[in-house]
Amino acid sequence: MHRVVPLRVHYYGTPVVLVSSTNPDGTTNLAPMSSAWWLGQNAMLGLGATSRTTQNLLRTREAVLNLVPATMVDHVDRLALLTGSPELSPHKRETGYRYEPRKFEAAGLTPEPSDLVAPHRVAECPIQLECRVSGDYEITSDSVHAHAIHVQVLRAHVADAVRLPGTDHVDPQAWDPLIMKFCDFFGQGQPLAPSRLAAGWQMPGRVVESASA
Ligand SMILES: Cc1cc2nc3c(=O)[nH]c(=O)nc-3n(C[C@H](O)[C@H](O)[C@H](O)COP(=O)(O)O)c2cc1C
Image 1 (cartoon, rainbow, N blue to C red):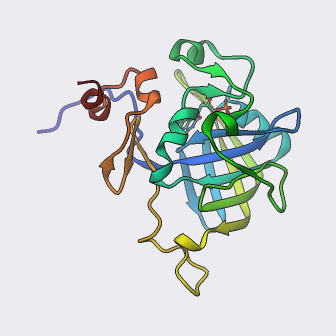
Image 2: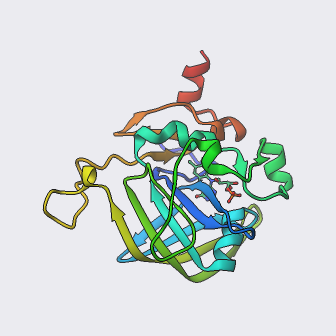
Image 3: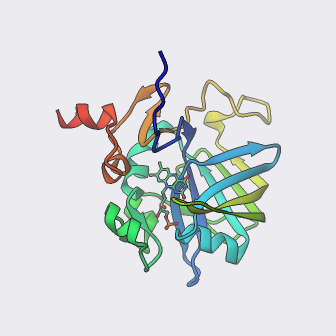
């Protein structure tokens, strides 16, 4: 039997991307996101209007999309309630976010210069995509002020460990993406560590409940 349910969240399971972007002072900001979809050499990124990443992307028209493997769940979770923006929205303040200008250090990750764009790549991520911003669509509704930002992949860096030997293809068996399902982390279909985001959103995720039981 189905029930009519006023679902609060529609995050059914998407790979986590760490977006590198350039701050006004020239440093690289890093932010986890998962509202991304792909078409050819293009991606659409769903990003909140108040995030530093959105402002950086729209100002500089550049980004690096660092694809995150499930093994990096702890690094991502360390970034979960941080923003590179000195001004916090009321929603972020209530959720428990704080300003952090040094995201690489906070996450324990290594910056690596890019070839074609200013933001640094995340050395630990096996797939790093240097991108140009080519479009922007504003999304405004009762509960959301966001942007759908269109980026084009200019150059892809792929670690040998996830490349099909002798080819220009990612090996689907070697590549195990970190998945954000509702507000919890999964890898290979299995729940991973509890997420700080789920706690901030007060989500009744089973991962969180079993961790605190
Ligand atoms: C796993 C994960 C996925 C997230 N996905 C998104 C997303 O798709 N879109 C978004 O706007 N924020 C998303 N967030 C929240 C952002 O990381 C948050 O807004 C953060 O403040 C962005 O950092 P910034 O302000 O430095 O850009 C996600 C957070 C986590 C931990």
